[in-house]
Amino acid sequence: GLSAGTYETTVHARSVDPEFRATVLYRHDQTCPVSDVDHPWLLDVAHVLSWSEYPDYRADLANVLPLSKTHHAAFDRDLFTIDQDYRLRVNPSFETDSDLLERTLLNRAGEQLASVGENLNADYLRRHNATLEWV
Image (cartoon, rainbow, N blue to C red; front, side, top):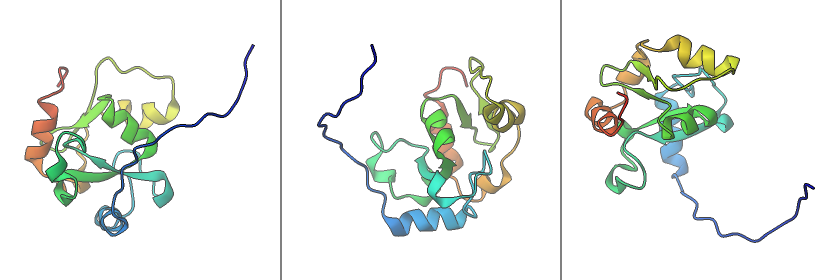
């Protein structure tokens, strides 16, 4: 049967400087541009050029945007992206029965995210998207 227990683990946590995080949220009106989630505790600082592969860009304000925790995970798993014209692009293989994901991703595919254009470097988006087979 099912059981629950405790175990010991080691976590390698990433530390985003609180001041940097506050600046990112401020620049984007404390709102996820994809989902409109506007509660700071539910927002992550998401990196276009990945944290692990591009350490020099970790603190580059033009490489980050606030995404809801769900949308951050979806972005990191290549379920959607933003193109260099700041349009929302959804992975064609992405299917969902979730009202939230349907409303915020599938129904908004192709939509321009104007607020993102003011803050994100289009070249970073182009470089990120060059690694995606479906874009």
